[in-house]
Each structure stands twice: as structure tokens, then as C-alpha cells.
Length: 219
Image 1: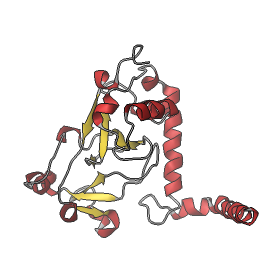
Image 2: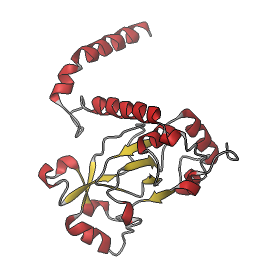
Image 3: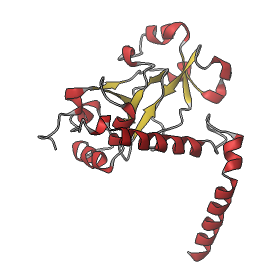
Image 4: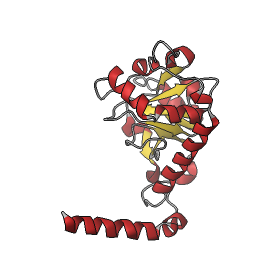
């Protein structure tokens, strides 16, 4: 594979995100602020998150009034790769027990706990599908024998350029993202929570609880 395909670093790039060096001052959970301020005074801030492939619910926001002037001018911050903030695309967790890639919606800022993957000419959803594949995870385990997935390791990943422009892969990935959002839609602590989604899933939730109860009795 390494001989047959170009590496991710040859056809694109992997970017390290913003380090505030003072999260207590600049970062807030979305429920700690007035929701109307998100998108203007505050921006969604993509931190490490959980091991949720395809899509993860962003819970943090960063103070970004006047285009982040206060954060950027803070003498201990590292505002790396600012040109890539707010772009729609793909990111992955830096520290994780499994290589975890997720969709990054537009108008979000990624932190130094994530890595933003950028390829100019590709379908981002198909790219995400490739990065979430078992083959990619297997290769990344070989490239990164620890729990820290660095940008330099990801740049060595061989990429089949036909796959990252395959409409079938793209559509399957979009479906996976939709299912993940629906999963978050029944959790009251998530921004995606919807009472309608909760009501629509009551039957499935009851079945799941019955199965868990039956399983606990068996063991």
C-alpha cells in the first residue's frame, strides 16, 4: 500500500489546532453560556471528545469576540493554522485508545487536542469514510504504537484517491453521521437533543432496557 498509493502528506495536510494555554479563562461548555451568543461572541471549540467515530457532539465553546483577538493576543496562547479555523472537514483525536476520525461542521475551531485533515480536491465525507475504516485503524496502530496520534504519523498514511472521491462511500458516511446525531438526540445533556427524536425512539429504548435486564438475569 505504501508503494502503491500517495501518502496523506503528499496530497494534503494534517494541521494542529489552537492551544489557549488558559482554558479556564476562554473555554466554556455550551450550557454555561447564553445559547444566543454561540456563533458570534463564542464559537464551537472542538476538543478531544470521545471515541465516537464519524461524528461527535461538540460540547465546548471558545470566547471569540472580535475574531478571537483576546485569545490570539494572550501571551501564552498558540493560535496555530488560523487559516483552517471555521472550515468544514475532518478531524481526529490526538489522544485515544483507537484512531477516531469525525466530521467537523463549518464555523468551528479545532484545538490542539485534535488534528484537522485537509485535502483540497476530495469529498470530505468519503475521506472520513476511509479514515474510519478498519484498514486505516490497523495501519495507524502500526504507525503509532502509543495512544498519541500525531500529525506526522497521519501524514504517512497511504490514501487511495479513488476512495476519497467515491460517491458510494460518501453517502454511506453521511448515513453514519446521521445515525450518530440521532444517537445524541436522545441524550438530554447533548446540544443535539430533541424531544421528538426521543419520542420516536421510545420503543427501541424500552426494547434495549428489556434486553439488558434479561442479560443481567442470565449472568
